[in-house]
Length: 502
Ligand code: HEM
Ligand SMILES: *[C@@H]1O[C@H](CO)[C@@H](O)[C@H](O)[C@H]1NC(C)=O
Ligand SMILES: *[C@@H]1O[C@H](CO)[C@@H](O)[C@H](O)[C@H]1NC(C)=O
Ligand SMILES: *[C@@H]1O[C@H](CO)[C@@H](O)[C@H](O)[C@H]1NC(C)=O
Ligand SMILES: *[C@@H]1O[C@H](CO)[C@@H](O)[C@H](O)[C@H]1NC(C)=O
Ligand SMILES: *[C@@H]1O[C@H](CO)[C@@H](O)[C@H](O)[C@H]1NC(C)=O
Image 1 (cartoon, rainbow, N blue to C red):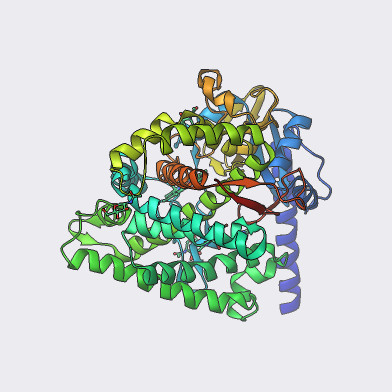
Image 2 (cartoon, rainbow, N blue to C red):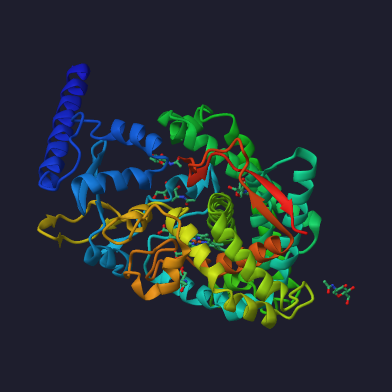
C-alpha cells in the first residue's frame, strides 16, 4: 500500500517535472541557439567542452554569438540562459534594475563556507538589490572617488616598490619570474593597506595568508567536476572535499581579524578620520546608531573577494601583452621616463603631484584599458529578467536568466576594428568607442565600486616598475596568451623575464 503511494507520487512528480521542462523548452525555443544534446542535460556538455577549448566562458559565448547572432539561448541542463549583445538590450541590462535583477541565488556558493558566512547574501556585491543595497551603495560610493582615494596613494606606492624589489630578487634567484606568484599577496596588501589602513607587515601578512587558504579552497571547489561535493548534503556528510574544514576554520579566523579591525576603529574614536574603505563600510552598515557587525564583516570579506584576483589578473595580462607588443612597451616606457621620472616622482612626492602625473600619462591609461578590453577579468555577468521584453524580433518571456558577456562586447567585430589586435591607440580616440561596448567594470547602478581603486593602484604599480625595470617574454612561453576558466579567467603561463633598466 505504502509502496504504491510512494510509487504513484513519484510517478506524478516525474510527469509534472517532464511537463515543466517541456513547457520551458516551448517558451524559449523560438530563440536561436545550439541544439540541445538531450532533454534533461540541454547544452551542459557543449558548455563544458567548448569553455575549456575557448579558454573562458566569455570566449565560448563569443563563438556562439558569431554563429547564432545577437540573441541566443543556451540550456544549462533544464535552465535556459539568454545571451545578448544587442545594444538597446545591453543598455537595459546594465541600467534598468527593475527589469534586470541580480539573482538571489547568484552568489550562493560564495555566501558561506560550511556554516560560516563568507560574503553573505547582503554584502554590497552579493545583495540582489532593493532599498538596503541602494542605501549602502550611495554611502560607499563617495569613499571610492579619486579625490578620496588619492589620500591613500602613498600606500600604493610602498607596495608597488615592494613588488619591484621582489621581481628583481626572483629574477636574480631563478633567471626568470613567475609573475603571478610574485604579485599574489600584494593586491591583497593593497586593499588591507589603502582600504583598511593596516600598515604593519605582520598584520598585512596575517590578512593575506588568511584569505589565501579560502581562495585556494574556492579554486579547488570550482575545479572539482563533482557536483555532489558542493551540495549541503555533502557538507553534512563531510564529503565536500578536504579543503572545506580548513577553509572554514581560516574564514572564522579572518572574520575575527576583520571584526577586531572594525571594533578598534570604532572604540579608539578614530572612526571617520582615516576616510578609507573601512570607514565607509562601517558608515554604510550603521542604522539608527547601531552597527550591524555581521554585514560589516561580510563587506570586509567582499573587498578581498572582489578586489584581489581581478586586479592581480589584469596586471598579469598587462605584462603578457607588453612582452608580446614590444613597441607598445617602449612607448609606455618613454611616457614613464618623460612624466613620472622626469618630474622626479618618488615616495616623498605629494599625493597631488602623483595624481597629476598619472592624469597626464594618457598612454598608460590607454594601455590599461586595452588590456581590460582584450582580457576582461570578469568575462560574463548574470541577471534575471523580471518582465517580458522584446529584443529585435524575439519576445522574451520573464523569469529567464540573462547574460551580457564582457568578452563578447569587447571582441565583437561589429563594435571593434581588428578586435583581437592589441592596439592601445584605439583608446586615444575614445570618441570612437560605442557606448556599452567597453564594460570591464560594467556600467550603471551595479557598476564596480572599486574601479578607481583598481586603476589608481595599477597605474602607481606600473609606473614604479617601469621606472626601474622592463619585461621580456620568456623564450619558453608561447606567443599566444593561454587562459583557463577558474572562478574568474586565469592566465596559464605567467613566466616573464625581468631586466633592470640602466
Ligand atoms: C581590474 C579590477 C576589477 C575589475 C575588472 C572589476 C570588475 C567588476 C565587475 C564586472 C563587477 C560587477 C559584478 C556583477 O555584476 O556581478 C564588479 C563589482 C564590484 N566590485 Fe569590482 N572589479 C575590479 C576591482 C575591484 C576592487 C579593487 C574592488 C574593491 C576594493 C572592487 C569591488 C567591487 C564591489 C564592492 C562590487 C559590487 C558593486 C555592486 O554590486 O554594487 N572591485 N567589479
Ligand atoms: C543565502 O541565501 C540562501 C538561500 O536563499 C541560503 O541557503 C544561504 O544560507 C544564505 N547564506 C547566508 C550566509 O545567509
Ligand atoms: C589574490 O589573487 C592572486 C592572483 O590570482 C592569487 O594567487 C591569490 O591567492 C589571491 N589571494 C586571495 C587571498 O584571494
Ligand atoms: C556554484 O553553484 C552552482 C550550482 O550549485 C554550480 O553550477 C557552480 O559551478 C558553482 N560555482 C562554483 C564556483 O563552484
Ligand atoms: C625621501 O625623504 C627621506 C627623508 O626626508 C630621504 O632620506 C630620502 O632620500 C627621500 N627619498 C627620495 C627618493 O627622494
Ligand atoms: C579608460 O576606461 C575608463 C573606464 O573604465 C574610462 O573612464 C577612461 O576614460 C578610459 N580611457 C580612455 C583613454 O578611453
